[in-house]
Image (cartoon, rainbow, N blue to C red; front, side, top):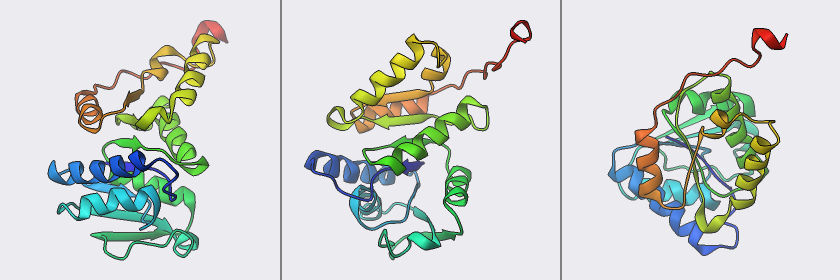
Length: 190
């Protein structure tokens, strides 16, 4: 599973606790973690939870970020890419599912790229948002507005699996059955 999340810990201690819990739970369930390779922030907590519970942890980081994000040196495997695009592509190739925890612009960009790829039929993986303490509530309202104003199809909105509880979200993701990708433009719209 690829996990996208912040390289900062933010100000909500529950986010830090849940990040560690997610890593530990993945390890206990035999689910490998693929993430951004940092030892700091929410990223570091997810990795620590997995590693301290015997999990496999693969970090993927572009060379220019190795110093900025304080790369984790105790990973099962570290993959260094040339660019951010290569990083996301490699993370996608190594994972069978996607989960997002709180983070900043980079986290949202990664989430939306994975959703867009799913919407375009480039992958059929479950995409989960771990909505700790309502962190993503405003974003989820915006997505609902996109549907209401017909900028987003309801079936594409359904690509997002949302829960505030680690085991419940993992269950949703395990039960996910991808639907056929609808055509973007129907012949009668040309």
